[in-house]
Amino acid sequence: MKRESWKSRIGFIFAALGSAVGLGSIWRFPYIVGENGGAAFILLYLICLALIGFPVLISEILVGRTTQSSPAGAFSQLGRSKGWKWGGKLTIATGFIVSSFYSVIAGWTLGYLVEAVLGNLHKFKLSDDALVHFTNLSASPLWTVGFHVLFITICCLVLLTGVRKGIELGSKIMMPLLFMVLLILVVKGMSLPGASQGINFLFSPRWDLLTPSAIAMALGQAFFTLSLGQGTMVTYGSYLSQREDIPRSCIPVVLLNTLVGLLVGIAVFSIVFSAGLTPSSGPALIFETLPVVFSQISWGYSLAVLFFVLVTIAAITSEISALEPAISYLMDEKGWSRKRSTFTVAFGAFALGIPSALSFSSWKNVTLFGATFYDIVSNLSVNFLVPIGGFLAVLLVGWRWGIQPAFENLKTGSVSFFQDRPYLASYFRVCIKYTAPILIVFILLNLLGLY
Image 1 (cartoon, rainbow, N blue to C red):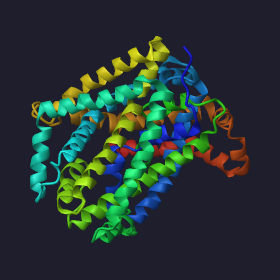
Image 2: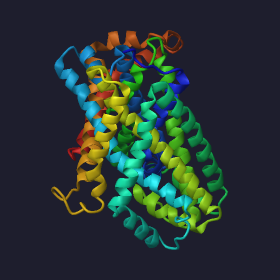
Image 3: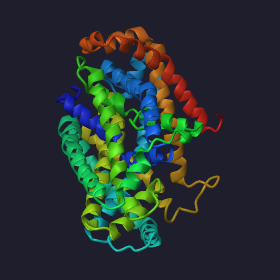
Image 4: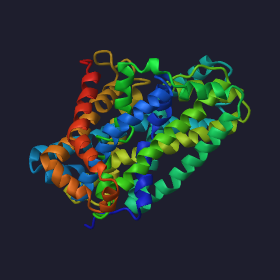
């Protein structure tokens, strides 16, 4: 079976960007910037991105492009052992687990898009009213499971048509639409009275807030924001031509992903502060705080619809990227058709996601050590399996494969890039072999509470 490939570099960039721009970019990144030093944190984050995020992204894309295989086959080829193949399988399993519970939360955003269109998010006077509305919806098994299956069905339809006609074409349509909607929200948000308070919250440099905890958060955000450690970028890299210039393809992904996070922050916090409310983090920002704001400001109905269009697009592009590694694995290792692989993976993610969906309703009292099923799978995958996957990727490239042969392969298609910037050769060697692995260990120790 001939391996699928991207039609163009811009198609790859949009697909990789779509994977990176997800719910975390909308409900987490702007808030931690505002709470941890504003412009000071942004500078620290960019440094961490250069030291860990970008090198790991390059490593994963390089592994995929070199082997033209799913993560399991890629790790096996370069690692030259069954042990490394299991490392690749671990990253595929991580992406699959992430896709199962991510689809539940993404289903909420799809459900809230429907609520916004129906005008149900334009009637709240108090945050308690919005909280009650959200609690009632999320406590309904029919609502949560229903939108969970609807959301994953939409993603399945995109994936069924393949890399070029599905993921690439879908990303080429959805990412420009996302930017267009985002810019509308930014312009409208900045025109509201009191919007300057939101801008100050986001961008005022407050160096006293750069604590060790803030440094750990910057490191973690730089790693997690690019969909690393879950097989996605290895798989997307495997669809690249062997002559593709990897650095020039990856730099726009990193820069645009950061830009999206900052623009979302401007849009959200200018709108929130204009209503005199205190910004919150996580789901509370989207499902509890913003509906109150949309109920109080002019153009509230239109802004609510646009905002949840934005969030749903971001969720779709991220979900399809989390499902694709498992689909690629079944096609490569089992010889299955894309249709059979897609239906199998999508159904599996849906089935595994049902306990997560019910964790907010009929199963909310079913716990293990005080944690629901959703808490367990989300914490296990995001806090441990994802960084372990990224750690394995840089160990594979920097140590098992070898940094010298890896770098020679990286220069394929990028000769002029490194000739014009010879200092970058040392940067990639040092970061991939030493800096990134050390910082990932730091992230894991911090998550375990050992540092």
